[in-house]
Length: 329
Image 1 (cartoon, rainbow, N blue to C red):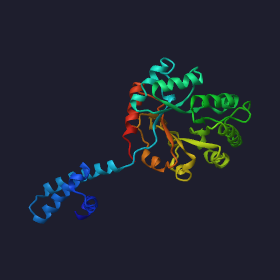
Image 2: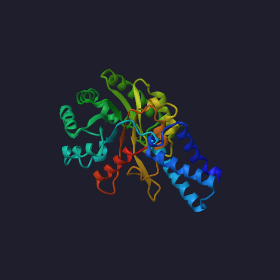
Image 3: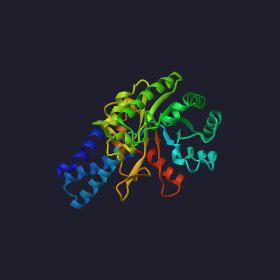
Image 4: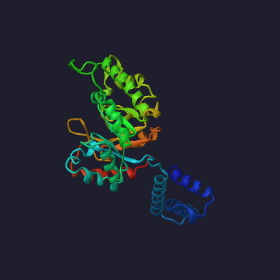
């Protein structure tokens, strides 16, 4: 019995040692202290039944747990959304869809295509919707073809990050999967383009899916990309959902070089009957984001991304936003 009461009594002692009047304590802590005082008084008078003792102890434990939640850290980075999540809605009602995001709590967005908007039109649409488009995605083949155009668009639209979400083969005419040499060549191209992007006052990053966690010639591709890219020119936007779907742990890299991961994609995943992982509403899947966000010491921005929906898209994105607004770690 004494060992079981230790965590509760420790919380009580910590609160009392601060010499704070009971009335000034947070409500949940005050409740815990009040309940523990009752236990102590009951023990001294030996006039309480075992059932009442257990009831009061349980109430004190619950109150202490609530106090722990209040003292837990919240995500400091602004709530963001990857617009790929609303790819089916934007072509039908671009302005109307954007207008519904800020009231949910989303502050920043990340582009996945510009829907035939000029940079000025894109920025104006974001301003009208109360959003900031801080990042954008361009696959490496498109980025190589339109380097200057994309850099100019980002500069005019106020975009801070250009992110490459897929590599390419050194010789596109060669069929078959990516080789390790193809990945190394892609890394060198990222360094080259990263230099141009940096000169424009923007940052270039790389975004993973699952192929980056394959092993080729005894080398894990993701480790090779990190080794072959210059940290001064190329950062990484870790998609935590795809890392987990690939059977890996984001902590493997976040704990070693957190400064290389200023951006994260936050998505939850659930496993279907066939064993494959699929995107789902935040909090409904198997990913525990508490250790991930504790380890993300270099985090500047993060973007919720839900790729698949079972019900109404906007309603599920609203649930994602509420989950992250209330998230503590």
